[in-house]
Amino acid sequence: MNEHPDIPHDARAKRLIDPHGRAITYLRVSVTDRCDFRCLYCMAEDQSFLPKRDILTLEELDRICTAFVEKGVRKIRLTGGEPLVRRNLMWLIERLSRHLEAGLLDELTLTTNGSQLRKYAARLAALGVRRVNVSLDTLDAEKFARITRRGDLAKVLDGLEAAKDAGLAVKINAVAVRGFNDAEIPEILRWAHGHGFDLTLIETMPLGQIGGDRADQYLPLTEVRARLEEDFTLEPITLNTGGPSRYVRVAETGGRLGFITPLSAHFCDTCNRVRLTATGTLYMCLGQDDAMDLRTPLRLSRNDALLRRAINEAIAKKPRGHEFVIEEGNTQGVLLRNMNVTGG
Ligand code: SAM
Ligand code: SF4
Image 1 (cartoon, rainbow, N blue to C red):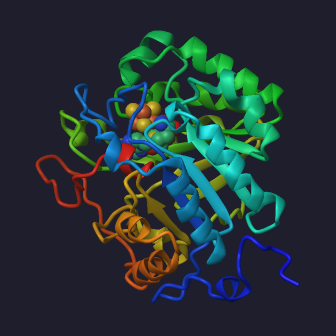
Image 2 (cartoon, helix red, strand yellow):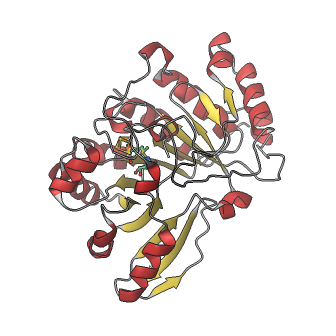
């Protein structure tokens, strides 16, 4: 008997293993390039967005995600742009939650700026979402408005309360920006852990044209960590997510702190992820331009054979790793796509 009628047996037998022996079990999906914020390190003030016809419909997103689940993907993260501004996103989450119920997916989660969490947190929890990542770089309302160019801190804090009330585990993502939040990081740490949230600090990545010099913003996390160690005891813990995070336990707060340092390629060996853009382009590595168009095979036929073949071809091309360089006057490694395209 086929216990998962949605997914044929023969398809389930085929797993995605890249040429470097890594199993691909994690899919990050940008469901829209649009956003209600314009964070300084992510977008330009006058950012232009993709025409609607180029964006995958929710049904198409479900088809692609399901094809990946058939091939052994166990975790899906929806991101953007801002995923919660995509109209009717709850329909997609409800569709994908059938894979959670069937035991084919371990986790369905989101990375969000939190502006819409008050509205959606309870629904997300009801649909099987257990955790969300919420991006927040400062606890000062005026600075928050400045870095997001249009965000309202009070609304995000209220959204976080709603997430907590709904029983969602929260991880706060804060981008470390030189001259902006360096001095505030200990306070953000105490605040996050005080609320029972994990905290991950992210190094600025040289992605996309944003207007302004990246080198001005770049703050190495080695520097941030050294400063935190003056006030806190950071105890290394082994939590291998297959991703670019290194985790410690902060003895004084009991909370977990992660460091995402994508500029060092040390995590590439265990990379288990690929990224889908809202237009159906699959990026095999955040730091490389290798990509595969999945929208064309998807739209060519109602049957998923062409799509499956394209996914296999894409994984066969996953590069071993990346090389980013970020220095004043040196744009080597600066990719032309912005973070709102690949979703981080
Ligand atoms: N809008 C959602 C949010 O902000 O969480 C999801 C998409 S956003 C592109 C995903 C993550 O990428 C956020 O945590 C954001 O801070 C981070 N990000 C954006 N641009 C970045 C950059 N140039 N370097 C490092 N992180 C960046
Ligand atoms: Fe929007 Fe997230 Fe980019 Fe900020 S980081 S502009 S919230 S997509």
